[in-house]
Structures are given as structure tokens and as C-alpha cells.
Length: 480
Image 1 (cartoon, rainbow, N blue to C red):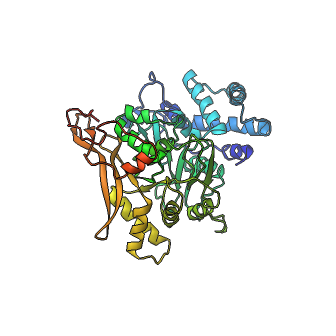
Image 2 (cartoon, rainbow, N blue to C red; image 1 turned 30 degrees about the vertical axis):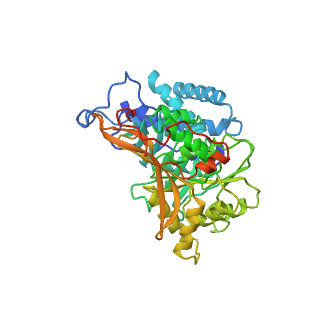
Image 3 (cartoon, rainbow, N blue to C red; image 1 turned 90 degrees about the horizontal axis):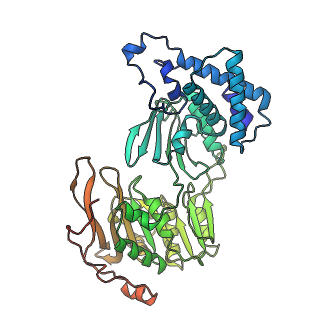
């Protein structure tokens, strides 16, 4: 959306929301009130005051937007944040003088921030996206925004002035990556410029108004040491995964929603040698590989006429013609699972993907179901043999009670026995209880099973510390 169109759309003041008060100005602006701001009055207290704060704020902001459109819409440099702020400050000072609007220093600052966020950012969402401690933003509707901070979900102070303002932010997000969302196509996956993943659902599917979920993109590329520091894995587990990736075993990361699958895939992909050619395929680009020889492909939804869609399966097939050493599929959701398995079985060992499943066995069952979604006539046993020969290692992630994300199992796929694909667990997380704050306590340990790929590792020069597969007593395990 062009800057002038964005500004024009924001010129009209929105109606005040019921129950708003002067003390709510900073909340409406999308910035959390400072610590010294008095708490919002209770309903009994606020009923004694006229609810004019929201009207004043919305009208003032709309008027300054009007000045911006009339005088400077065509000359604003969106890359010069400081210059835009100075321009907004000048217009705000001018309007405050000519319209005799009295603003406290606190509200003046919030007004500048709100205007700047509307012009260059994502309005009330901007401060949440700038907060490094927040990992997820969940907008249930215009007046209710939850965030995840340190694994805990909590209600934020941020609200939108109306559904109209929320829709403007949504349109800005989806249009920036060539996507669309409207009443005829009310669901959409997109991403922000920094790679954060976005999901949008509009009415009539969303009954309470537009809703949006943002999985924030980590500004720093996490490393294995980061997993060790937060107790998500152990040195032995990461050493085994390093050997598996370097020696070209195919790895499947399994887990539930928000369990850390993509984060783990990003981390272990760092073990791929830098001289290999990698093709990544995703529905919405999230992976951030460290290597230089990387081709990034992203699926495309249909256009407004319902044509032009490029599915992940199409990209997997095309990737085979690009001479990849490895293919990394961000997530297998459908028929592309068949193409991925065939690629792993025909010279692209060491490829990786993720799948939504609650256990390694569930992950295998999910793969079988997804292969059937490809419309193949393969019998069940043939599909199982494909999976057994293609997938070498399954890493199970889980978001445990208290919000921590952990690797809870590392196992190998060992083949078919009596018509069932068998797994061989090497490492696991054993919970021991829950602390006073509701956080799971436990420890990681080896199970005592040795890897079935020891000869494979030896042929490729991968060695392990003594006792890596020996179980550890609970007394030596670090608490979660």
C-alpha cells in the first residue's frame, strides 16, 4: 500500500470506544503507560468523568495526519525515521498551537510515537514487535491483544482504536509480501519484513472481528549453546545431532504448535558443511541458514482469480532439478511428503523437515497420511518402507508445563517389524515434578541404547565422547 493511501485511510477520526477516559490515552496510542501514570479508574470512578480522552486523542491524530497528507505525503522518505519524526513533531506543535489543544508531556510523547508508528510501522503493534522479550503476539480482536513473554501468555495493555485500524494494519502486512485477504478469501499466511510469521482470519470466519497471530522472528540466530543454556538439550544430544547432520542422515523434527520445531531446525541446519548447496522450501519463509550457498524458495497462494498458486509440492519437484546437496522443507503438511521422501531416497540424503505430531510414532503416522494425500495408489506397506528408508532420525520437541521448550526425545527409525515402522530411542527428557511456580522440573538422559548407525558414523570420521549413550541417574541431571 502506498504511503499516501495509508495516510489517506487514517485521516478520518475513529469513534471513541465505550468506557474510554483521558487516562487511557497512552494505551490507545499503543504504548504502555509509564510507571508513574495513575492506574485506569474503576468503572465507578470513570463514570464520574466525561469520556472525552479518546475523542481528543483520535481527533488530534487524525488532524495531524491530514496536515501530513496535504503538505508532505509525496516527499516523505520512509527510510529516514529521524527525519519523519522531526516532521511529525513540527506538525504536532503547529496543530497544538492553532487548535489550542493542551497535552501533557506524557501524552505528547505518546502522540508522536503513535503517529510515527502509523506512518512507518504497524501502529499499536509496533512497540510489541520492538520488545525482544516478546516471542508471540496474539490479537483476538481490536480491543484484546495477548503476548507471550518468557513462555507465559498474558494480556497486554495495547488495543486498537477500532476494527478499521486493525484492518489497515493487516492490509499493510499482507500487501507487503504480495498476499491478499478479504471477505472472499478471509484467511491468509504472510510474514513481516524481518521474517516474523503472520496468520490472519477475518469475519465472517472470525466472529468477534479481525484476528491476527504473529510468531516473532528472532533477531539473533540461535546456536546450540543457547539451547544448552536454557536446559532444552544436553551436550551429548547436540553432539549426536551434529554427527547425524554432518554425516548426511535425514532428520525429521516433530512437535506440537509453538514447541520450537523451526527454531531447532534452524540450529541443527548450522551443522551442514558450508561447501554444500542447500535449497530451502517454505510456505512462509522463516528459516535463516548460516551457509552462503543457499537457495530460498517460498510457496505462492492463488491470485484474486484463483489462479497462479505454487504449492510446496511444486517447489520440491523443481528443487530436484537445481542440483541440491540437501533439501530443507520448513514443514510437511500434505502431498509434498511423498516428494520429500522420494528425494531422500534418491541421492539427497541429509535432508530435513518438520512435522506437527505429538510423538515420534505419531510423526510416522502423519507422514503416512500425508503421502496418501498426494493421491498415490501406493499400498500402506510400500509407504512404510519409503519412510523407513528415508527418515533416519526423529527429534521430538515439546512445550512443557510452564512454557519451556525442550527436546524430549531423540530416536532413530530402524525399519519395519511385523508391518510397523520401528523407532529406537537414544535420548529422552524425564520430568521429576513441578515447582511452586508451575514449571516442570526434570533432566535429560541417554536411554542406554546405542545408535544403529555407528558404522556409518565411523566411515565418515564422526566420533563420540565415551559414555554418550550411557543413562544418567536423576541425581546428576540438571533441573529443567
